Image 1: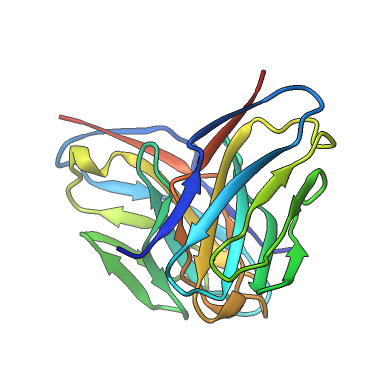
Image 2 (image 1 turned 135 degrees about the vertical axis):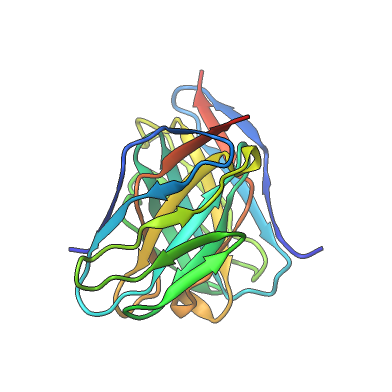
Length: 112
Length: 114
């Protein structure tokens, strides 16, 4: 079946460090891929998405490239800020439904 | 401002009690969803509704019930049959039915058992 696997957290970085959060997926067909972010005490917000192979989603300095050959959608940011501290969820759509399947989430803590 | 409102923010349930979580949206979205979030497990789909007066079970519907009598409202009832209800519950909506890929989320309700 379809599934999403993210790297274990928490990830702790100093401000201005480079961020990578790994995400790999298993899916039939050609899913769309997403990163959602959850700030403390809030719901999830869409951060970026990619709908086909080799697409790069980007927003707020974050980027992720849809890699079909490695079934991956790793999230990257060149220089993190304390305000980026949150839980990040990788997700994909189920084929023919549009409903999302989420990974388990990765907590990012950025220290000044 | 348009958005999704969940209430209450915190809720406590006694043994054998049913409780209802409220979800209201003013985005004029057709589809609405309920997810359960447990630490380290991500989000799991409980129920979803594509249109008024219609809803379907998600992956973990046992012990829960919903209704969709109005487009803007999708309340979730956690029944006494749900033996492990402590979790963070998130309501979401999307435009264009369940084939829309962008979900808008509420700020969640934390349910705990007394």
